[in-house]
Image (spheres, rainbow, N blue to C red):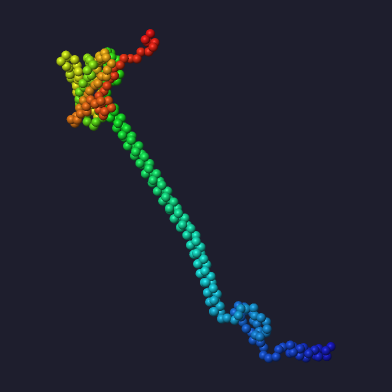
Amino acid sequence: MPSATITRQPFLRIAIAAARPAGPPPQMKTSVFTTATTPVGSGIPNPSPPDAAPDDSFKNHQHRSEAGAAAKIVAVRKDATRRVRPAAHGRLVSALGLGYAYTQISLKENKMNISLRHVFIRSAFALACATLAFAHIRIAPTESAPGAREKYTMRVPNEKQVNTIRVEGEFPAGLQIYDFEFKPGWKIDFKKDDSGKIVGATWTGKVQPYEFVEFGMLGINSKEETNLVWKFVQYYEDGSKEEFTGPVGSRLPSPVTILKKPETTASGSK
């Protein structure tokens, strides 16, 4: 046993020496990206990127990052521009639409105002005509029978802004007036012809604006069928007057009472 151990040790040293390469031991290199060491010239590929200075690699990486960020900003701005332009276009279209709608509404309002103005003018004209028609001195009734005793009522309206102070009347020739209705605050003066027949009268008093007064008279109609034409003159406090002596249909017509016989029916004639 001792002799066998002694013979093996020199053989192991010789084998280790044969396995070692000739020359100086290999130098170790440290990579920037890893802490592992790789023998120089060992033939094993280095997994690290090519040799470069640490500062240059960092600057290149930073430059690429900044370029990518700038490209993203430009892309975002372009996308925002694409989004803003349709919105601005939509606002422009909406503004034009509102302007057109406002123009149409204004035209409709103008047409409506013109129509209302025309209606107002026509209504005012009709009201004025009606006022003039009802402002005339009138006699009721407008029809009576020949030879009949009749009560006639004279209505005197005042549509002016001043008081009426006097009314002068001329009675129809075929009518005989014999009695009058007196009003408080009024005075009546009679006009007679040479035979003593009452042919007219003057009423003196006061009718305030937009008021009227009525006077009653009793008379005997003519026995013939005819038209009784009344004539009146209305005097105002400012010195003006209105003469209701014109024909029927004029601005200031004379009141007319038609005398005609009542129509008889077949049963009444038997």
